[in-house]
Length: 237
Image (cartoon, rainbow, N blue to C red; front, side, top):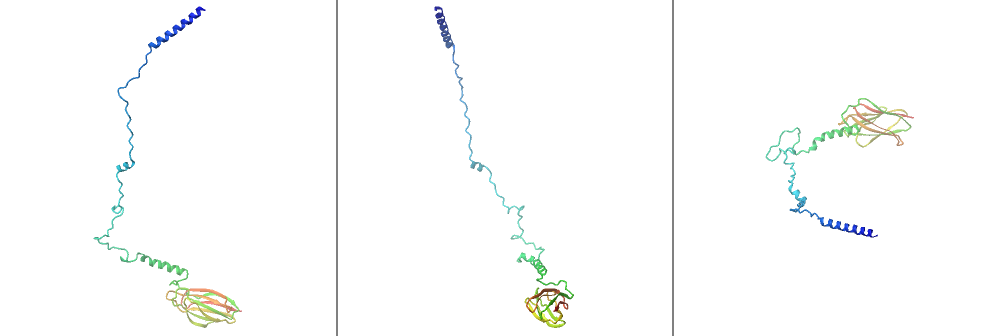
């Protein structure tokens, strides 16, 4: 027992002695000292956007009126003589639209002729023409005429079975009428062009009504030459 106690005391003394020796021999390493302070980073410069715009050169809008490559200056200015050469016949005060009037009138005239609203000195119809054959029980017909084109002095003679009903009718824009009595059986009604008008051949619209007022036919002739006839054949039953 004494030996064990002695051993414990010896071990404790050795341990304390070792710690004391280690603590006396250990020295801490001081932190290195620097002779100069660390440099400070420069503060970033914040530029004013408006100041940047002031540094930029100003943009000048080009004047197109001063640039002769874009808009060449007119030679017709004060102090310079206007060129006397011209391909047109209008003067300085003429309406520029006047040059188109003749063509427009020509096109309008052509359109009116195509629709039968204006006469023209085209090819005249130099033959007798038939306006149809009809059967009726009427005692008479009422025949109406008018010039469907331009009023230019067209004249028409009306006959029935070679008997003159009206020697001369001047056609205008309003209908003019004649009464034609029908004989039993065959009747031929002739409408002769006595002339051609000042604007073209003889032109007429014709309407035929029976004694009850019913329309029998509505027809016309166009550009009929003088001396030729348009005819209707009627059989009275």
